[in-house]
Length: 111
Length: 295
Image 1 (cartoon, chains in turn orange, yellow):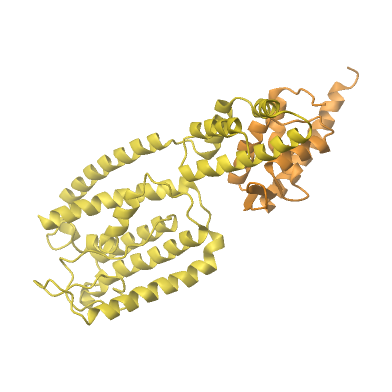
Image 2: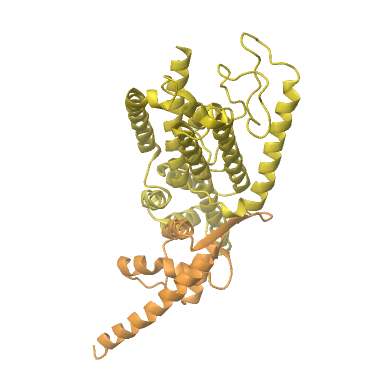
């Protein structure tokens, strides 16, 4: 089941979560949302109304690129993929997060 | 079919985002595509239409907040704010041009406030300026990368053409002076401006009053509209093939270059706005120039 996180925590991490979801392959918005739920065992549920503006922001920042794809019997879908800049950004974010979470875990030890 | 309630929900979001219609349409399509899939999956799970709609709307949250987030991403400037900026710019351009003309008119050429400098700067681009200004408030965000690159390259060539035409018309000893320097700077400005632009080329430079007959030769005046001699109403017939040939060469060349460079250009609304500000500024000056010349 979805866990309730503080808005600040999610806000700070949402974009990196989205980037991480796209690490393996290109996906469209709905697929990204589902992939995040699946990969995090339904712990992280990003608001659907927040994911799309975030995707657009990441695209504007050059971290994602997109293309429209037509498929039979469904509406056109906008697929997003990581750009090299996005991959680099994600690698840095992951490293930062590792250091930060280690430090935080140490702080929380004994609580 | 997607339930009308969901479509209305999306329309509500999109209507709140004050961006260009094409961008609105893309957001609408993307959200509808999402809801379309989610709706059918919820139905497969056994939810009724009202239940599915309710779930989707709930997951999306307050449409105003969603719109606000989109608007923040897409642009800080609304179209209304943009209109105010354009209005102010016109006013400032008016004042600036009158002041510049008053102080430096003599220096700019033969007692004519605008002279060669202005011919070089604006001679080839009046229709373009008018066109681009007319398009300011229309939807042009869908311009493709190829068209964009094409226009940039074409405009650079046109600008080069206009600037150099003015210079090479002069006797050799007069080619290097302040006016020509200004013409080259004007050309550079144009190239810089149009490197950031999306819009279309001028097709008929209108400087019909000052163009002598029979000088339209490639490359310096390739896209100058052919005009008859003083007092003549009709363009001499032999000029037309050359005009169209020159014109064709320019566009063909542009097509090739644009095809080669098209992937290097990116489209952004902010960039477009900067270009439009520049071009509207230039348009204003051009219009004043025309009015004074007719006077």
